[in-house]
Amino acid sequence: MRYLTYPFVVFLLLSAFEGRAQQFLTGKVFKKNSTEILVSVSIHNITAQRYDLSEESGSYRIQVAPGDHVSFSSVGYMADTVTVTAAMLTGDFPVYLDVRAQTLKAVRVGEFSNYQLDSMDRRKEYSWVYDHGNTPRVDHNRQGDGVGVTLNIFRNASAKEKQRERLEKRLAKEEEEYYIDSRYNKDNVTKYTHLKGDSLQQFMQKYRPSYEYCRRAANVDILVYINDSYKQYMKGD
Image (cartoon, rainbow, N blue to C red; front, side, top):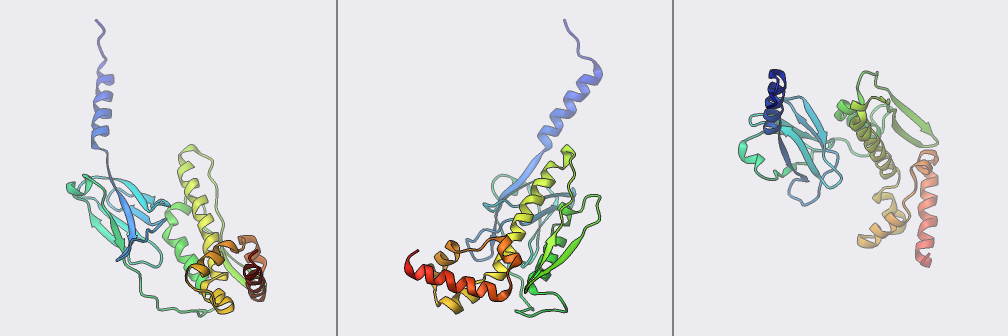
């Protein structure tokens, strides 16, 4: 008969206990009073010091225990903190974030545009992703009339940083999309095309410029691009 050694028995018991103890708070994050999902919401288990981001589908999943305090936050929205209960772990727990009142309109504050200020806010919001043993750096690039904040991502090749690096790449891609939105926005497109509703949305999707183009283009170049694209749109191209 084979006998198990004492250390091995203890290891098995601890492993089994840990497996039973792991619980996850799951669900989706929505804009309050809406079915609109919110992506890349920062989820922070304040009690256990764990972090995660909501997915492109709005879904989130974070390890918790009853009694933990979990905060949900995103730039442009009011943060919400919940205390985890056993009932919340029996199924999906939806979270609704209210839009934060904007005190800044389309103006510049000092040398920064609204886009730059929002970009720096996002950098602070996701500091747990970006800051891991390196000095964070934000570059304010200027080309033509195009201005924006470039997030310089510092890589760490260790295996334990793979998830963090994946999130960095995802956030960097989203930052590019935010920048395109700041240069190629609905107000300008509507002003020069007079398109509305579904037609406006279809036009903006079909002729959406690349990030590289927006970085090198002056404001007048963007307006010319919209005008030329509209001519093609009216021809049915």
